[in-house]
Length: 316
Image (cartoon, rainbow, N blue to C red; front, top):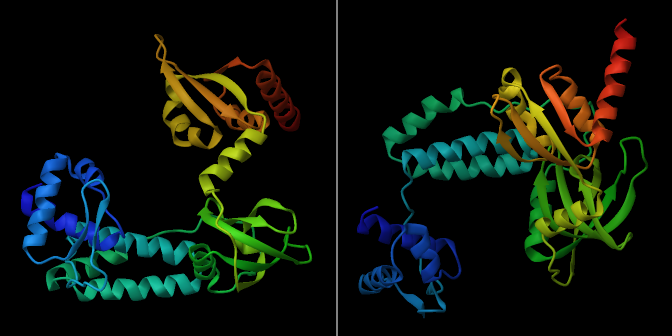
């Protein structure tokens, strides 16, 4: 990156964040701290009003605005891909907001780049994964309401179904984050249960963001997941895969607690898994027979043997 591009990138960082620290910029752009400070002085000499000092951090003076930054073709393409993901994997309101944001992006692109995106867009698709049929329970703007409550630390009242056939119960919760796996979830402190709970968004029958603010909590999604993992009994399993099935094993190993692997002299691969459910791991390994060998634990061997016997009895 040449100096002009680096200074422009630093200016973008100053617009995007409240405070930017010199060491972070040096690490981001692979230059020395002295070079970063020299670039910041160049911005000041060019009339950009910076606040701050070395060792503390820098920010733009409040109220200072710059013209829209031009996007590269690669950046615009990445955002179009993100728009497709939002449309398929969130609710209608969030998809509408995403479309509006993309229209603003297209408005600042060069004509040639707009034509490029228009030609490319029909060739990018995001397909929903097959899921069991379920009633549509969530309001159209559930995502935006939850994200707003997280940012402003506002109490949320949920009408929540523990299962699709259950009667909704009302919960007052303090949300700390949302995530997407097979479904969208919100993790929140539940005042009814007096502990953190994981709520699926498709099971929310009603939602109201209250004006009551809750006290900030140190927990994040990462600390919640770490606590959940510590509560579960984790089993270490060592499994060897033959060369014929390696490509298929690599495709899905992450879903079963893969930890690390070692290549063996005979061309086989030995993988170590940390799993909370040996039966689930055994069901997956059954697909690879006879090109799989369980080294440990014996309980996993027993689970695989039982599954094989049931399958043999069923198809005999």
